[in-house]
Length: 71
Image (cartoon, rainbow, N blue to C red; front, side, top):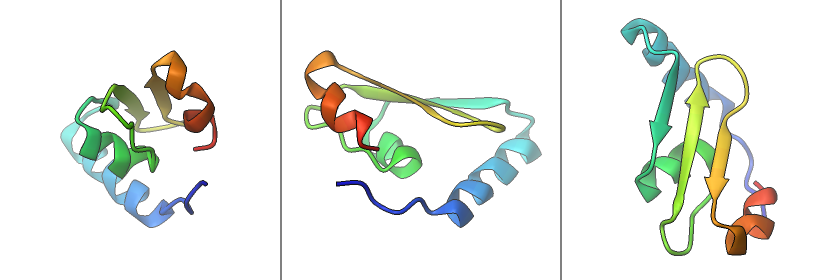
């Protein structure tokens, strides 16, 4: 099941990234991955690359790929 994308939240994150001169965020903590991607890794083994411009990239373990592909 996928959840709606909170575009306003992601725009705020990107604006703050611009203020700080960041081109991308690389997050590993499960709560940070969830916040930026709406994906909760069952065992916490996931990370995300969240660029200021463009689509985020979610990295997950092979056993979780089917679920991650739904995000």
